[in-house]
Length: 244
Image 1 (tube, one colour):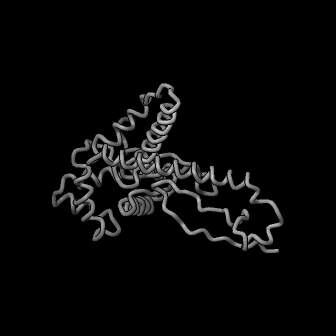
Image 2 (tube, one colour; image 1 turned 180 degrees about the vertical axis):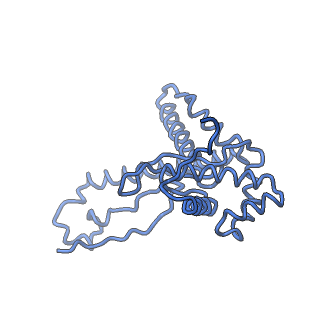
Image 3 (cartoon, helix red, strand yellow; image 1 turned 60 degrees about the vertical axis):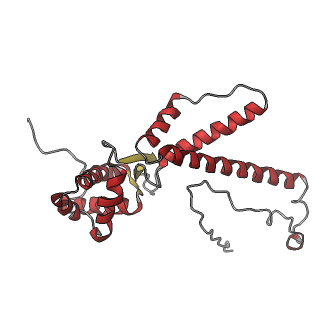
C-alpha cells in the first residue's frame, strides 16, 4: 500500500506512555547533556532532541511554544535551549546529538548506548580523540629520544580531529588542553606503576603484616587511589566487610 503512517519504534508502549518516556529522556539529556539508556530508546530520543535544537535555532514565538510542551522542566531548560545551546549550534548545519554503543548495562543484556549533545563538556568523541593524540605524542617523544622515526597520525584520527574542532568554539585550543591533561595523566600513571614495582622489589610485602601499621610499608598502606582520566569524576569508595 502506497503511503501510510510514518515508521518509528513503538518501544512496547502505547502512544501516551511512549511520548512520556521520550519527553523524560529528552529532559534528562538537555539537563545533563549525556545519558545512558537502551539503544532503541536512544535512537528515538535522538530524533526528538534534534527537532528541539532546530526549534531553538529558529528562536520564534511559535518555536518557543512548541518546545515548552516537550520539556518537563521548561523553566530550567527553555533558557538553556534558546541561549547557550542555540549559540553553540548556530553554525552547525545538523548532527547536534550522537549515539554511542556501549556494553549492556541492564541485567537483561539489552543493547545499551550513550546519547549525548555534541561539542559539549561531556563530548565522548573529543575525549577519545584527545587520548589518541596524547598517546601518539608520548610515543613519538620516546622514539625521538631513541633516535627513531616518528609515527604519522592516521587518516581516521585526522578525521576525528576535524570533527571535534570544526564547529566548536576554540576547538583546537580545547583539544590541545585536553591532550595536555591526558599526557600528564599517562605520565603520572606510569610513575605510580613504577613506584609500585620498586616497592615490590624492595620486599615490602614480606612478613606476616602484623606491624604494617607501624612500618607503613605493608601492602595495605601501599594501596594508592587509582589515577582517574581527566574527564572521570572521583567517587568515594565504600567497602563492606564480608559476613561469616
